[in-house]
Image (cartoon, rainbow, N blue to C red):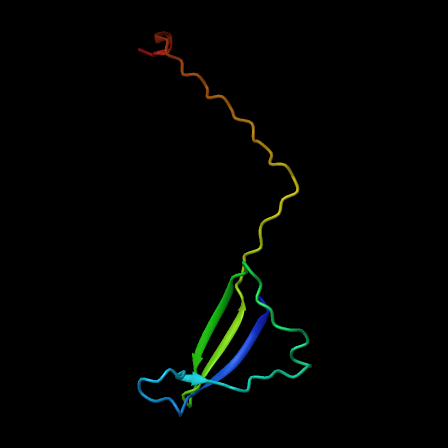
Length: 100
C-alpha cells in the first residue's frame, strides 16, 4: 500500500451563512508533530493521488490523501522462448485405404 501523505479532520463551519463564500467544513489548525512528519509534504508533478473522505459521528469529515496504488510491473530477464510449431499430419486422400 502506498504511503499516506495527509490525514486531516474537517469540522462543520458554524459561521457559514446562506449565500456566503465560507466553506461548509474547515480545520484551521492542522499541525503534525516532528515525530509524525519528518519531511515536508510535496505533491509531485505527474503523480496520481488517491483521496478518500469519511463522514464522522458528530458531523465531522476525515480526509486521507496518498499516492495512488500502482500494480508492480512484471519484470522478466529472460528472452521469451518460442515453442516449436508441429506441422499437421497430412490426410491420406487416396482411395486405396477404403475398406470396401
